[in-house]
Image (cartoon, rainbow, N blue to C red; front, side):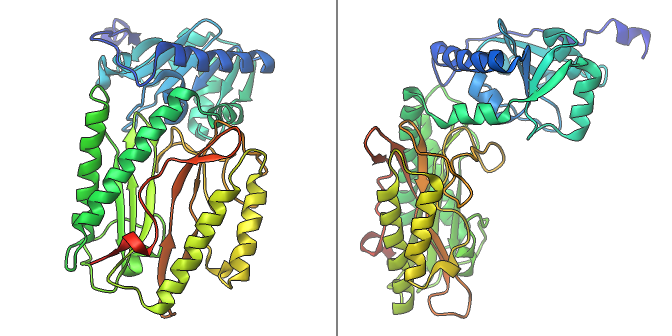
Length: 405
């Protein structure tokens, strides 16, 4: 380290501009109050969050790492986001609480900044499902914690129950997904490429988000539009394949609003499906409707899953199921976050409660060369209420609307 390095600070505060957040200060204070209660129960002096989803959940700031570490430190009295100098004042404008910028004059200034807030020798809560081995070693070296506590499961359980403000945002997201779906349907024609259809849906959603949320940050909204063989996987990327008459199509719109993910997924056909395809489609549609009827308070994820398995088995289609039947919604995306405690799988015993948000999305994949080959998938978002569930997805499913051309 040179003499000039010693005169350069490892951190500083760069606060400028007006603060704009997706939720009110009270919403974030309520989340932090719940977290601090959890910290007190577990004997935690300070939490260090490093994941995009938890930092966004408790502060509103959604970071873009680009190889740099980011954090949120929560103590009984402070909530401080820690960001890189490359972002200047943007993290402060988009976070609740304090923000400190760390410099890159010395390696590990991030950790020097963290310990300036936590202090050494404290009981530290962290996310064991996110910290890498290298970062865990740095945490131990710089913070010298008296003990470490994995806080990730507790925070996930908190995120499962959505506040009224979150549910309102998710309603907007579902409506935006529908806008993208209608734009895609209007664009479908023989000879057009998957990528062209996908761009039409994405553009429509981004414009709709900007109309509904003029003060938001806009990023990460996307579409997976698949055709033919490319429908066999739920997360298959878009290609330049041209649509052909008779194709099975899969429409998947994913608007992102302030880190919150919503989705619409539908099976379509370009022209009338053949009888074998129509039979598989009808089975999956019936499973979709049956599954939505099962989503109500008191039902367990495993119970819903087993009932749908029985339904598919009765129709000789269970062997074509490729993944679980649905999952939670909130701060998550295709590259961050997962509320794994609320997924419709055999090994999840979580009981559905009012305030949870969950999808119903059965999928059957028929291998190439068999009658009805292709991937069939429907997807609706449901809010669990006191006495049932509310479907907030409005784009129609089934052949009456989704046989195009």
